[in-house]
Image (cartoon, rainbow, N blue to C red; front, side, top):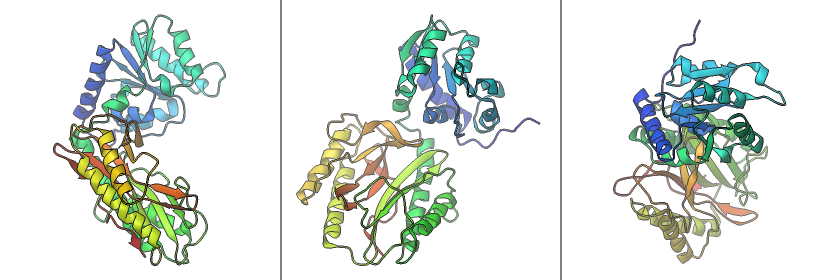
Length: 389
């Protein structure tokens, strides 16, 4: 029997709107066909959330309403089930292209380009996402095509969300808030970090009571004393102790849209240094949020934060945020000094104020935010405090 279509995260009209925006940019750049290989961008244009571990490509043609998705044969049913695409627009290639030294899934993508009749026209590739041998294969097998580098073209387009996307990101934020609330309940002296993580992860999947469930999951980051100066490590088999500080960075996931959040916890009375840093960061966060409005730049927001933090006697060396959306980080705008990206309504960011001062001491707090017509909406709503347990 044929697999049925599953529930769609967005209506067909939303995906066609996104495709129309991409096609408008393609026409401007004289690109007749655009081969999209970024997993996040394929999700954006089709609704597919299957993690495809084999080579794949989405061919967007100016001459076709729907794009053509080329995937490994075993992944095709999942793509038919999850996407808005007509069944005939999902092509599953054979196992004879798997594990071969001279052929692979990109050969099937190139065959699809020939079938669409666009092999001798402007061809857009996300060259920044392709290994050199893959790029060479496209050039060799499509000698008449004019190859145009379209790396990050779609990433920048999806930087401005639709109202439907913002609604999904609010749901993701509510899941993140529920996970932080659960962390405050389960972090206690004598509890293994791994056991606490299991409980917090369950909250990321269940979501808030009566609210949306998490539909995906990324392992979150957690470190406790004396490892709080290390931002990007996972939990351990150690136990929490009286006097421990715990830093957490996690997220809510909804249809592959992500809302991250960071919070700091202290078992017992926090040190004076930690308390002072927390107060400084919260004050600087308020300054950054007050600087967010359309027409301002990412640099304006960042420098409002940096100036305020320095008035409190602290400095932060790294950027204080980045664009977010599908699959966490969008590789585009940074909330950093010198980034002159103009803020526009429905841009979304992780205002990320992690600050790692010493090898054994750091602090984290953050919010997922959305630029509005007049200022900012903070999507995450967990208490903006230093949690004392």
